[in-house]
Every structure is written in C-alpha cells, then in structure tokens.
Image (tube, rainbow, N blue to C red; front, side):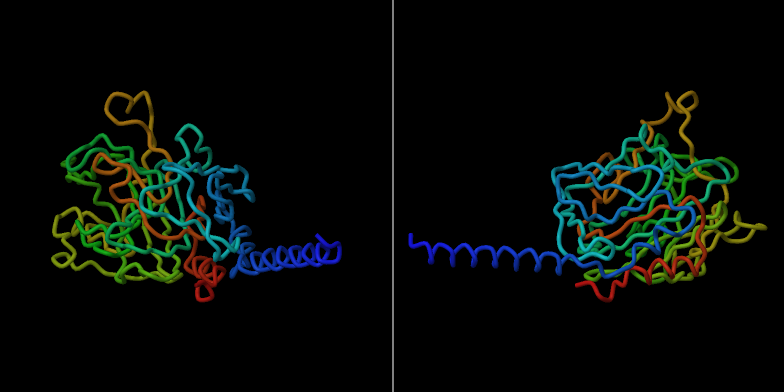
Amino acid sequence: MFPRFASRLSSTTALLALLVAVSRLAGAEPTGDRAVVEKMPGLVAFWTFGEEGGQPRLSPGTKEKHALNEVGGPIARVVGGPYSGYAAQLNGRQYWQIKHAELGDLDISGPEAQISMFAVVFIEDLAHSKTIAGIWSEGKGANDDTGTRQYALLMNMPTYGGARQLTPHISSEGGVTRRADGSAFPWCADYAATRREVPEGRWCTVGFTYDAKYLRAYIDGVLDVRPLDAVKDKRTDRYFTSEGPDGKDRGMNPYYHGRGIFRYDPAVHGTTKIAPADFTVAARYAVGSMLGEATKGRFGGLAIFNRALTEAEMKQLHDSAKVEALK
C-alpha cells in the first residue's frame, strides 16, 4: 500500500472513531439533575442505571452501595435517561435482586417505620407490567398467609379498585391482611390507588410515601387524590369503611394503614412463613412465580428514602428528571 494512501486511510479511520465516540457521548447526555436526588435528606439508595448490561447496578452516592444483581441474564443498557444518560431495558423476563441478608438499610421495617420511593420509568405493557420495586414475597396465591411482604410500589392491582392505577403497598403482617377482629382477607388489601392510570408508552415518574399512618401515591410528582367510593372501588368491607381513623373509612389516596411495616423474625416466623423477602426491582414473588407480573419497559432512576417526603419534595424529584426531554 502506498504510504500516502495508508496515511489518509489511517486519518479517516481515526476521524470516524472520534465521530462515533462523540455521537455516543452526545446520545448519553442526562436530561435531569441527579444532585437534586442525592441531596434529598433520608436517601438510602439511588440507582441511575448507567452501567452496561452484565454489570451490577450500584448506588454510589449513599452509605451502602446496594448492588442490584441481574436475574435472567444481562439487562440491556440503552441511550436516553434522566440521571446517567442511559436507561435499562426490561423485557418482562428479567429483574434485579438484592438478597435479604445483604439488604442493610434497605430493610425498612417496624411499627414506626417510614419510607418513600421514587422512580423514573417508561412502561411498555401495563397489562403485564405490575412491579416497580420492593421487599415483597406473596406466596402461592389466595389465602396463603405465609408471605413476607414489607413494602412495594406496584401497578394495576384490580382486586380492590386499583386496575391500571399506581398501587403502593404496605404490609404489617407479611401475609394476608387481617381485620380488627383477626379475621383474614384472601390477599394483602393494604394499598393506596390513584385516580389516574399509570402512563403507558411514555416516560413518567411514579412514587409513594408512607409516614407510619398514611400511604400516598404520586404520578408525575403530583399526589393524585382519590376519595373512597366503596362500591365502585370494591371496598365495601368494614375494614375499609369503618376501621380507619376514628371509625371512619381508610380512603383510597391517601390510604390509612397505621400499623407499621412487617419485620421478619426467624424465631417467630421461621416455621410459619416462607423465606424473608429479597429486595427486587421489576419483578416479585407472587402466585408462586417471580415473573408472572414482571415489568416490560425502561428504568431510568430509582430512589429509596427512610422517611416520608413532603408533597413539595416529591415534586422536586419529578422536576429533577425532566422527563419531557426524554424520547
């Protein structure tokens, strides 16, 4: 090969490589401001999903790293995300997991426990996609009281008026919900439900707060208030209508719970419950399966706090993502 031609070819190759690198950097530009999340008091974990598939997703700006490990193979990284410039692409057959023994300060539980969760997501199939994240193992189905539920941000729970809505759950029993007299429901019935449906086919933010009394569900940074309509919402049971504060109803959003978050005790629950729940993202153990209600879509950010954020703070988190700039 002639030296001058070889030199030109080398220069062209280098230029193309540079253009590709610049293009990748430009495509991975974050739309949002991660510092808003990182500076919010009470932050326990914050994942931006900037890592490549095959790598644990880490929470580097918190006391504990909380490595999310992939289950079901590498989860693809795609360009376009609020806090790292990237997002994780879920196909409904994969999820992330932190084993219960490694939860550290994610293991939020006890009678006075408070928690908030915030996520930036693009839900592709709401009919199947029902799980954002949480410590939530339900067991094998109706009337199974062996579950080890704690907290979870779920979607599309129609049994008690939450069809296609955002439905954050809190459990004090781990298993099924029980009325004041100890009688049992077939399921965990303790969840708030928004008036609006979870947005499908676009980026949005979803979240909840729990102040040890009330669950509040947020879509796009707004508390989507919904009073109880007992008949329409399938909540005619006295548990919903007259076992709330001062003998009144529990509401829908906000929803009154007030009994704290289940804490697994091996001395008490070792022979009556399934194994303590792991923290999982995009899937949970329900009706005997981990993938029956797994999520299909993109995750661009997920944060957990050990206190109940205010309405203004939830709006700040939403604004920090700038979802309107995401494709």
